[in-house]
Amino acid sequence: MASAAVEEGNPLLIHTLRHKSTAAHPPRTITRSFPTAASMATAAVEEGNPLLTDFEFPPFDAIQAEHIRPGIRALLKKLESELVELEKTVEPTWPKLVEPLEKIRDRLVVVWGAVNHLKLVKDAPELRSAIEEVQPEKVELELKLGQSKPLYNAFKAIRESSDWEALSDARKRIVEGQLKVAILNGVSLEDDKRERFKKIEQVCFHVVERDEWDNFHVLL
Picture 1 (tube, rainbow, N blue to C red):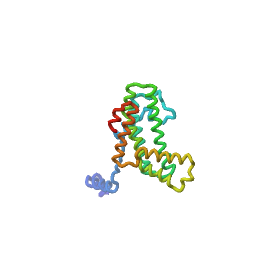
Picture 2 (cartoon, rainbow, N blue to C red):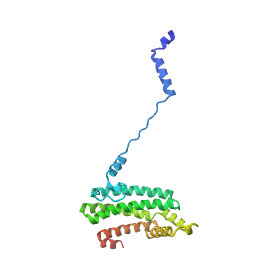
Picture 3 (cartoon, rainbow, N blue to C red):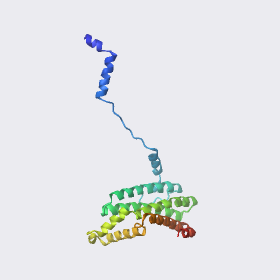
Picture 4 (tube, rainbow, N blue to C red):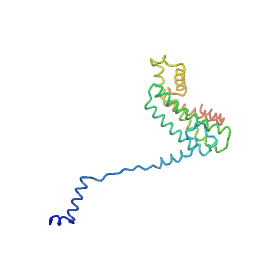
């Protein structure tokens, strides 16, 4: 009991016991993830933007000029990310090639179609300015889709496979159409010529929108 009394309250013994306890059970590190400024900015853009909602029919009454720049850019970023992932995982099969590709293209066509329709029926300077600003970025994604060699090679593999004759006529037309579109988009061009093709395509789209034929002739 005397020994217990000596030990009780002895600061040296208390320190030793604490040290042993800490060594046997080291403190746990709790890692907490906090949203980054980029993720918060992205969430702010997506929240309330009608162009980024999963609609069946375009919400024309809700789309305003201020939605176009952030909405289209957020959509293009998302679709480009999906394209990059598809190029990494693509296989020459319908579920691994055609279906995910059509999903990307359909979303772009539907959203851009809604924006372009508004321009035709509800034209205004701020609306037109917003569309003209993001249109080159939209054309750039379309060219990436059309010039994707992994996707082109996958369609080519389907066309040259032994299962080709077993495909329905509709599916054969889709595959052959995709191959033709890729060639027309310059998929087989060398890098420098493909870049020039992109520049010409950008000007062509600009000409269609603005009828600025002089700019077109300068590049030719």
